[in-house]
Length: 298
Image (cartoon, rainbow, N blue to C red; front, top):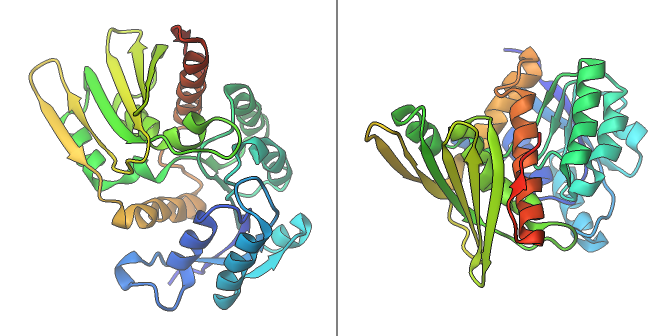
C-alpha cells in the first residue's frame, strides 16, 4: 500500500473543505465513495463573505472529529504537509493565498474557479510558469461520467449546449463563482479556441453564447434556482449525445484525479484549459454587464 499523502487544506468557507476530507478519512464514509492514500492533517480557517464564524465553527468540529487540526495560522497549517488544497469559496482571495502556497514548491490543487477575473487568473498562470509549479484547478463537473460518455460519443462537437445553476454569490460575480461548473463542462467538450461571448439575460437567468474561431458554437444556460446539470453535444456528421449529470459521485471522481495528480505530479488537464475556463467566465460577466459581445482573451 502506498504511503498516505499528507494534505493541508487552506480555507474553510466552502463545503468542499469538509466533503473532500470526508472521502479521505471519515469513518462513516461509504466504501464506494472513499479515496485511499490521502489524509488531511491540517486546515486553515478564516472568515469571508461566504461563511461566518458560526459556520466555520460547525465545520471545524466535523473536521476535528476526523483528526484534522484546524488553525488560523497559515504557517502552522502547511508546516508538515506533502500537498496543498486551496479550498476558498471567495475567488477574490485566490491570488493572495496561491502566492503563499507557491513559495513552498509543493503540489497544489486550487479549487474552482481559478480566480475572480481573467486578470487575476493570469497572475496565477504567470506564477505557475515562472516557478514551474505542479498545479491542478478545475470543477468536479469535468469528471462526471455522463459528460465523459457524451464526449466519447461526440469527441469533436460542432455545437455544445450545457446547463446548470447560476447561484447567487454574496459578493462578486455569480457567473464566475457558480457558472464555472457549466462552463467547465463546455470547455471539456469543446476545448480551447473561443473567440467571442454574448450573453442574453432574463428573469430565469442568463444564456451565454460562445463563438469559436473555427465556426463552432457553445451555449451555456445558467438558471436561477435550478440545480440540475446536463447538456447536448452535436457533431457536423449527424452524431448527437444528450446527458444529465448524476452528482452523487462527483466529489469522489474528482478526488480520484486529485490523488493521481498529487502522486504523479501530472494533472488530468492542461493548465491552459483552466485559464480558458476563466477567460470564458470573465467574458460572460463582461458581456452581461455591457449587453454587447465581448472578446474571449485567455
